[in-house]
Length: 429
Image 1 (cartoon, helix red, strand yellow):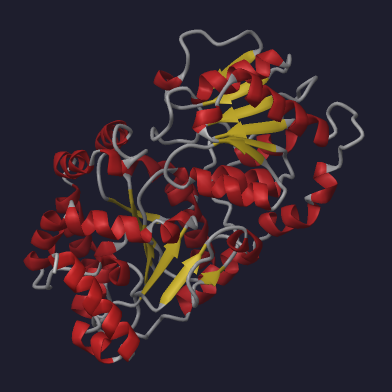
Image 2: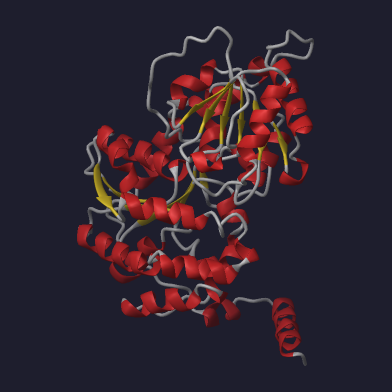
């Protein structure tokens, strides 16, 4: 089992958890990911093939923050980011890594959706069975925009890599990025239904809690509010300042967890304690509430602990995640245009009251969310994902892209007329 993923904790740790499940079933598991996760993989007893250096990873995170919150704002900057950090060369290296580990009839690749391009290339070249895993619904929601970015902005770099391996360039990225027959979504049905649903045929496994590291149970006289913006640097500069001030405004102590101190205000308000990291699996059940950025790993851990959530969500998948939680009635959130100390403090005060902290009449959050919490904490999702990975063993078959002429032949007369009209409009006829 060859697992391939890129990103920060929310993208990598679920793969570590799935890898551990597969290893416990007797499979030889190799994880291709960033050097920064070496210790976590060693603790899980999994073999690690690093795709970069720890220094290169941190440099890339720092570089990415300027462009990835809103890549459409400066698409040329995104291309420069790829070139500067050698990401096209990394893609070629990953194809070679997969092919070096590939044993026909025995190997399966489980790769992160949208960044698992090397796995799809190996499937085209060698017939490697591939399961694509999405960690957040936004990977499907944003696919048309992302496909356009890949084609129009990053196309030349990708074309060079595909041609290096004897493959024709991709012209329809939307189809290519969803071409694997097995696609797994690491969220449950109710979360899927609370927004734009994943395409038909995608298996909704449920949340996979990757942050399983344990620590001592906190001994707090009064449970604090947890503040976290995740482990990446794609974060609005005002996040920690607004969250900390909201806690101060309502007189609540807070534990601020952030491994990138550059994001924090120069001086934190009284009652705010900073830590670079914390074992959320142990800490989350003992805090009064959590104020966070809307990352999928953080919200899933908070749900599993029935911990009240307030989201200051901005960029990438976070607003979509926040809207889904709010529609389901399990969290509240503010878009960046509404980030003020007063508004954040008001939402936090209401979340604390609903969680039973203020003894108010509303209360009952933890009781209301109990069924969803039990579902989020379940290990069933990991087992489902592992089952689908195992089902691919021995299904080797060279992946072929659909011929555009075949798709045209399947169009109805009405669709052909519409397509011809669109073509004429583009030519200005």
